[in-house]
Length: 335
Image (cartoon, rainbow, N blue to C red; front, top):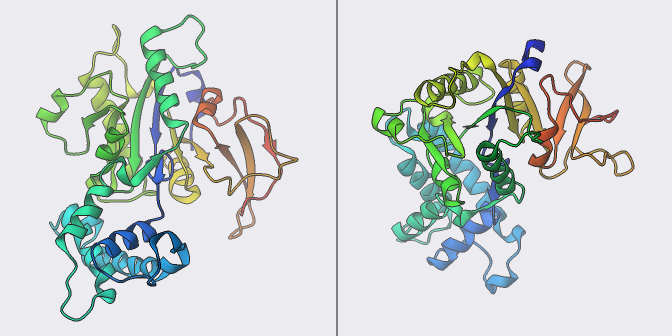
């Protein structure tokens, strides 16, 4: 668990989950897949005008995609890296198996359909950035350049990273939204590291694809600590040398199990971002502050734990090591 000694530290490693925390699909994936397939001649939904199709009409696609994803994960774990297939061919196989049940005799899944979907989910074309993300990163840029006398961001130095269970498309998706993503990744070559800049919005990206394990495995978080050490060693971020021991570690994600509890078990502090208010208290109890401290009853052992939550990244300015800061406590069981 995070140490109370971290309270006196003035530097912060701030790491985020990606999917569901920074961005989300701009169209539900079954609908995006289904509409793309219809354009390529695969009749995978009722014969209606496109604007009359509902989410229920694409329910068979959702089920088929789930089976295809599960099957491909069993055959070629970790998006195909474990068997040398690679992420692009792995996803091509998922797409192919998703649509096979809908093919007519003699019909094949068109290469153009596979290409369209691969492209869509490699850039901002397939996703929406949550509205608080760019303003938050703009604030960090401003603080790093202006260094105001009394900043509302309490940290002297902030290093930002991404820790996510995903393949190697995540950096490209984030870059397509205008964020500057540094080249550091587990196993990065020397040539890529030379390209790193302290002007990067994100200094490093830790992918389960590279690490070989998925959150909540603590090895994902240990890899981020390694990336911080490399970032500090490779960058001149001040006159005095800075060690990773001088940093508080905070992880922000949208999954209680994989993000919040995974980070806590790895010795980090954590904040659960509640994008869809699934865990929010009743309106009459809700705090006016964007960050709140909530209690959850763990059904498996009956214990009560406190979960630090926010619904806007701007609230992170009020966070302090140990999870308190400008938060309020609500006696509400989360389900």
